[in-house]
Length: 306
Length: 293
Image 1 (cartoon, rainbow over the protein chains, first blue to last red):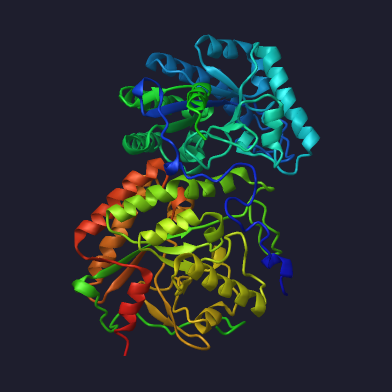
Image 2: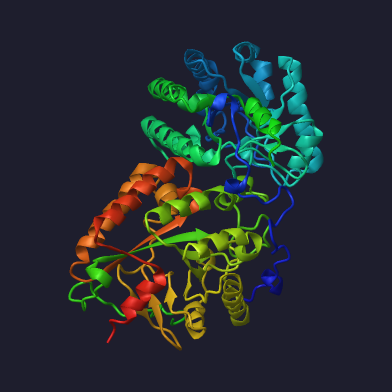
């Protein structure tokens, strides 16, 4: 067998990227960012509020954390719901006790099904960002563009109808997009997305959309459920990350530590205390600026950085 | 290699006992080399009939963006830590990075790092290439790295570890003198090739950061401790005959903020120990060659 000769053609081998979604830029060469109050590390707490229909959809793909057994998978359906009923409230209490605010990436279905929870989140001063319709609302390059446009619009409209607010930010399920997503999010009036993990500060797509990187490697899902580590190891890693970023900030300007949290993972009784201690330790650090995603984007945009 | 044979015939069995003694410069017992992968993965590569480039339909946002983190952010963090503790890199390079992000390649070159080829892109696989096609990627690699850095590549780590039965013979024919694709030893070893000569330099998948974090699911501190244990054993065994320790890295993994601190402590430990000859791959190959009968 011989490969098609076209396999050795490289039509996009050029300076910059092999796409036009966003321009090439290395973090260390950019103008330093300054966060409010002279703080140097923005700590962004982002909680995912997910509703998994017990009837999972595999089109375009089944979301991480979705049903795993033959129908009806009571085990995973109820364990995920535990996160919304109990875990989310443990997190709300932990945030209140520490005096910090967070972003909640919320399925529209959560706002419709559990309006009391969403009201409690908003009343505490947290931000809600859009996170599709429900956990069957996945996006990928195989989703027809019209369907994707409708999914984004439906997510925002249903969230607004149920909660009274229209989100400014967007997190795709599993951070999965199509080649059209950045334009569709812009067209829908969204200001920022959290899907691209290639950077550690906000940056602009070519179409003006801002990406606020939500590092998947620092998420509770990645460290605790994928890499099977203890909550103590998770907490140690977050402290190590903070220490490193605070050190870098003394030379390069503001840095950012995103903590992506999943109520049915971090909100369990045997894990939450370690998380509370982690937040207490980070709040005590003089370099830390706890902020919502919207506040970080606002501060960055006001500085007219690239 | 002997194509189709059950034993590919790449080398003779050489038991670890009673080998001729290898000595490293300065009386050091273990040669330590760090091998950062400087890579470019295409967002929408053509399909290869034997392997998918991405787990998801294109664009695989997390897969692509995670690797892009290397060039935008974590290369610079990883490289600074290496330079601070006196570790040069021996780079497995997706040579198209010379076109896409020449700033990254220039930074590595300015730090005195050595380059070897890791193919054109890490999303183009050598499986099923005919000889003409495989010669084309070898010639492209030699030319591209020479134009970008002035260096002539001496080694090969196959793109995404994809080979043909001809790969080792061809790179030897083109004058490359080491391969990083064979994992059978803790010392440099000769490889049987058709023309010329080729050395297998110990690389390591086992202490590769990808294996550490995504196969063995280590915490950052466990991985740093693993590197120290690997070093301690090889430094002790090297008193009998010099060993080689390779630390293969990907900036998008080791350069993450929660991992780079513990990694720096491992480098500090190895540099301070006194038994390590910290070198580039080519230096190790030269020192080994100089001791062959």
